Image (cartoon, rainbow, N blue to C red):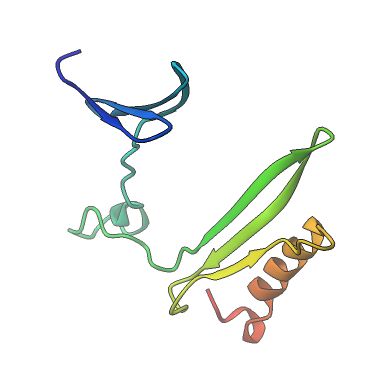
Length: 121
């Protein structure tokens, strides 16, 4: 360990150790964060004769599901979808009255395939 910085708030301590961040509450580490740097999908794997080596493929979209455990079963409380054709991401949250996790999945799938005969991707 070469260098450590601590930051204090009213209820916790954030300890920075290089790239690691520890969130400490009541003298216990509650989360440990380590950033992961991911490279974009290599263009040259798709086009081996090209001179480009690290261009991202914008045809790939992102799906994000946020879940919680309910009686040993994962349930979705939020979902997001983004493609290169979207100006902003599509986001769904669980209905607080019905807590219908399945509806979020249905809405996400509908949006994915509702594009004019798969022309979104």
